[in-house]
Image (cartoon, helix red, strand yellow):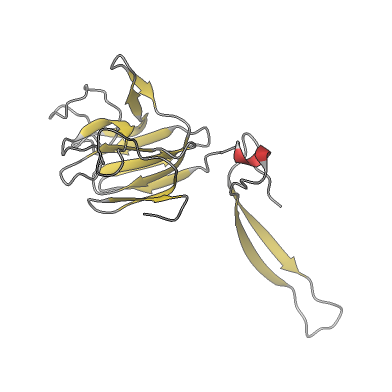
Length: 197
């Protein structure tokens, strides 16, 4: 049994050996079991504890890393805002700097100031955009948006993370209740707890 606890990872590999008996025909056998810690909604202790499993993914010419503290770090090309760092303001310009060291992905607060994106448990990267899933089941997106892949209700690129909107009433509801995310070339997918994509 793998029990999640603060500071622990959500996944573990266990090396298994099976020793033979005294017979010379039998030899030791080895194997590997990969365990992923998931939430158990019936256990109130586990259902309130969601930890990030450190992860890294790559888009086209940029990388996204998730630390176990729930923060997201990016580096590489930044021509479409795919680093999500907002260092040049909310407008994508030729001055958006590529980065050869990781920077933290940011969100905008109510006053329009940049704050660090946190409480993330999964990340995904597409061509020049990225997604993050937070512990509350909300999806965040940033970067290229020519095909609407950010789920923002428009086609404007964005250099900071913002919540993905839901359904046909874009601008009204935020996408929520999500348990998994994926990114393709210029499209994104989200899976909710009821099994709908």
